[in-house]
Image 1 (cartoon, rainbow, N blue to C red):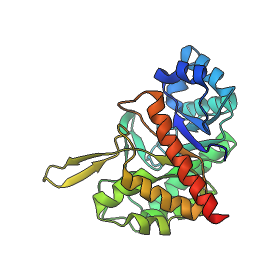
Image 2 (spheres, rainbow, N blue to C red):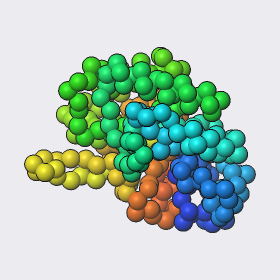
Image 3 (cartoon, helix red, strand yellow):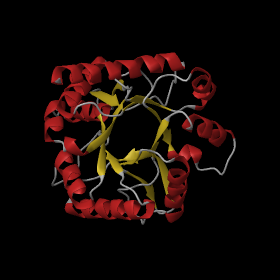
Length: 278
């Protein structure tokens, strides 16, 4: 089976990737790291793009924010898309801007009719401007809003219905949210519009205590994928079949071979699913 698992491209691995050419399905880049005009990041990425597929993942568009989308930011995203021809482009179901400020966190949304209209309008605008389909990523959640009238899965399904966007399913986010909010991760997967998923994310999380001393999981991207998340991923793949799967590590980035081992594990789960289906 051709590898389908990929890794986030990190500056500390540029040379190792070019020297060793590991067998991988793709590398994913955070768009905001490559919005400069040139320099070493683009030089290395151009060289790597000659050998690997690229997925483009944005964290700053603020799809759920109350403001109009930043057209300059959209233009930079489009320039990257034209330059590197990613096989998918994704953004988060979240907001990160207010007035003239930008927050470093991806903040949650109430799932209401008003929010639905705003998110759908922003996705329509993004897809029209980019000239391509966008994937929407489910968030990690630490609270719920009393005014929400949709479950998260039904809200996302309605967004897809209205906009025709695709989905990026972050399995770690599903697990983190279920634990934090007292939900059932498998029930969430069963309610999720899986046939629209075009990419999967896997990551590690941190277990901490909140101000009341209660356990809380944080989507930290600083450790290995946990066994619980691997198990949930296997359940997803049993339902969807093999899909491009990213191992995310944004903090405490280990040597490249350590991340490659996790990518191999994801590929192994997909191979097992394909064999059972044969």
